Amino acid sequence: MTTPPKPSVLLIYTGGTIGMIRNPETGALESFTFEHLSKHIPELKQMDCLISSVQFEPPIDSSNMEPALWVELVKIIHENYDRFDGFVVLHGSDTMAYTASAMSFALENLAKPVVFTGSQLPIGVLRTDGKENLITAIEIAHAKRPDGTPTVPEVCILFQDQLLRGNRTTKVNAENFNAFRSPNYANLADVGVHINYYTRRIRRPDASLPMKPHFLFDTNVVVLTLFPGIQERIVSEVLKMKGLKAIILKTFGTGNAPQKEWFTRAVREATRRGLVIINVTQCPSGSVEMERYETGRQLLEAGVTSGYDTTVEAAVTKLMFLLGHGYSPEEVRRQMNMSLAGEITLESDRPLQQDSLS
Ligand code: ASP
Image (cartoon, rainbow, N blue to C red):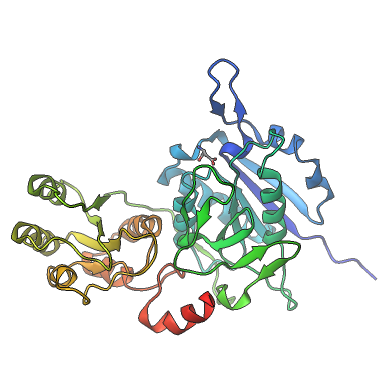
């Protein structure tokens, strides 16, 4: 009898606290190589899978992450897609939610796990959370269902004891090990003695479609947060900015804004000129419903598009992704109102979402 081949996982080390060491002169944490990292986790050799690795040169603090590096990541996954059962991306936690969101759009028809993880304490520190995160992420990246298909064939974030859909996440804590939340979509798995997968919440890809990588992001977008007292001059300047193609307008509550004549006029003029304006609530959880109050309806009438229950991270990266295709403003607005990778909850998804939150 022949033994089945061991599953294989590609570890992509981009940088982040997990692999950092303290600079003895400045005291600041600086990125270090993968070799350094693996030396501190001899357990990797005991895992029941073959692990290969590649690293960014140089590894970076994730505050230095940018769309050109997202493209690098897409290329690495695309070039190695057929050779591995799953991928683990080691990434700084600061912008992990952006990169995970970007990957969820750029890796169309993804049918294998891409698990992001990192840590709040470097791997060389005694109380590090990095070791457990990395080992669990590798386990998830090659986990299979009884029918042999991957258990989590989507882009996700594993941090401490939670597995979250990548494009639903946001970093909520700069200190706690439990640094991420998925405010509008329930966990894909909880990690304890066992890894408890919630299969019905996990995306099922169409296995007949090949994975299609995308390499273009257009960064002509901006996030504008409303607050009481925001000035006409500033709003007008932002809306008229040269080259700007899309704005994420962070509104109050269910998508509401001040009822000022100058404000609605400026917004209406901007949408008519072809600027895409996406309404995203400032509340950490819940959805935009512009029909609910007069203060929201005025935005709808001025041509603003609902961002539903999106995170800012997903909205920013989705806009860059859609604008990268060179789509017309109408097409960008249309696709912002569709769920491309499970990033928003539409009316038609609500029964499922209720169920998944219970
Ligand atoms: N500044 C670090 C980074 O995002 C923090 C972390 O890794 O958690 O790269």
